[in-house]
Length: 157
Length: 157
DNA sequence: ATAGGACCTCAACTAAAGTCGAGGTCAAGG
DNA sequence: CCTTGACCTCGACTTTAGTTGAGGTCCTAT
Image 1: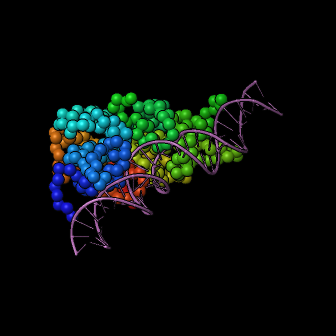
Image 2: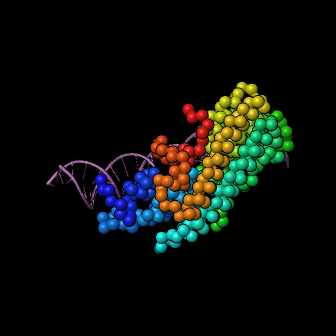
Image 3: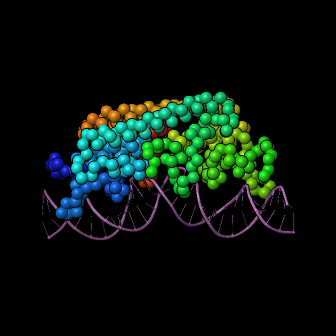
């Protein structure tokens, strides 16, 4: 084992410290969410702030935000220099709005559920449960857990 | 157009009233979340309470609960008789707990995000953002948006 | 009776977020 | 020298939640 605490991290170290599988880190890199320097032997070396990027990615994931959206957000961090506190703070503020919105949605839904399904209401047209924000979703085929859920209200392109 | 307001619904009517595509209703039926009678000509006929089932399914979806879990819940409704108010209320109560838990998770996360990413904290081991419930997830291959998120805390089988 | 829409089945495709495995380097220890 | 462990790439596979299309039936109004 190499017990070096170098300035840079190997992918294995990043994986262990972040709790994210190596294969997932590869995947994130392929998606452009993460970047690395390569050594002479073609191995990845990550700067320290990658830890933060990964933490951010996972945090976003946990609340159901798709990687594409996370990628968009991260893309607005400077890629040349290491992001400053201010860069991160801007990003954090943006996500805070997103999370607030989601919490609000969820709360509304919970209340609608208690009022509505619990009470025996049968009308679909009137029901808050049935129309919780009328997302007229026909966006394409396949799984679309996110959009249908009407969840992300960060600037849509 | 048939303007009949019969006791039963065709799949087209159920689709329109619920806002769910016919293909999705087929899919739900295949997954056992929904059931129907067949006419002589092999067409589906739904009872009125299917509307409520579908609304429930979508509501659960919107908050990120996978169909399998919804199916489990719905399976505990009586299939022979039309579910009573009490049947639904039981179910609703169970979900309320689920939603409360999720809201709590999200809120915690939001706060951690503001404190932590905003402030320049770099330690992964200490960071609430990085370890928001330590889900040691290695459950199998493929997409697992739900389990990794550590989200559902309804009785696990 | 016949055209039109609504319905049926079934197979194939899409998309997200990864995992897994094969086949091949690289570096250090014995 | 050789083995062991970490790393590399690339392609195939997985799961969830559907959609799309082909090919065929049913029903109802003209």
